[in-house]
Every structure is written in structure tokens, then in C-alpha cells.
Image 1 (cartoon, helix red, strand yellow):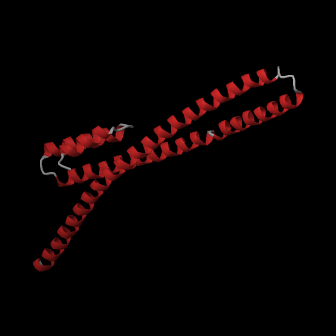
Image 2: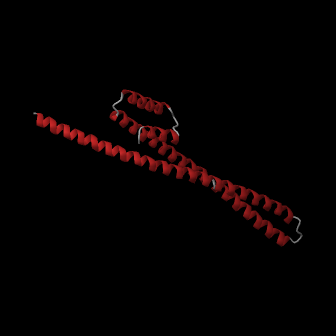
Image 3: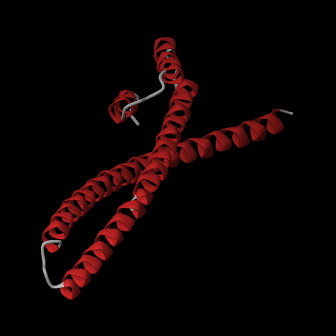
Length: 174
């Protein structure tokens, strides 16, 4: 009977050791999520900046073209005047259409922001798992209480900054 208990204990310890390795791997994946999230946030920022500049340029060009239409109206040659007005109006219409099409940028930005939020949530969940693992492997009652408090803090805190995550992980040697 003792031999069977010993074998079961060995299996249990082996399983625990495997979980520990899996959780350590999970901790390294969290860092990858942090990197991906920063790239997404940078893409959102750069895309928004480019879109704003394009909109500015379109508005400025449209304004100049409208001024040109006023100048064109003073041309005496009807054939030239009509052709210039037609071409200028065509360009204004194309710029206006382009401006309308830029609305996709806002939609893309919103999608990227949702992805970024999902990654942040996932990162927080991984942190909770790491903290829970720390609670289970910690022997000191005081350390257990500290870890539990951190976990409860995460539960109630909607936004966790990356600095918070890093500080918690460093505190517990992860």
C-alpha cells in the first residue's frame, strides 16, 4: 500500500512540476503580448497622424481649387473657362470623395483599439494566473496575504498599467 501511495505522490509531484513549467512559459508569452500591444498602439497613432495630415492637405487643396473657380469665372473665353471649371470641379469632387473614403481609418482605428484592449485583458488574466500560482507555491502566510491583496486589487481595478504588471512580477521573482 505504501508503494502505491508513493507512486501516486510521484505522479502528483510530476504533474505539479509540469504545471510550473507551463506557467513559466505562460509568463514569457505575456511579454510577447506586451510587445504586440505596443506595436498595435504605435500603428494606431501613426495611422491617425497620417490620416489627419491627409485630411489637412485635402482641405487646403480644395480651398485653393475653390479660389481658382472664382478666378476662372473672370475668364472671357467661354470654351477655356468651361473646360477649366469642369476640370476643377472634377478634382474637387474627387478630393471630397477621397475625404469621405478616409472614414475607413476611424473604423480601422476602432478595431485596432478593440484588439489592443483584448490583449491588455489577456495580459491581466495571465498575470492573475501567475499570481495565483505564486499563492499556491508560497509558504509564508504573510507573502500569501500580500499576493491575495494584489490579486483582489487586480479584480477591482479596471485598468492595470504595464508598470503595475511589471512591478508585481518583479516583486515575486517572475
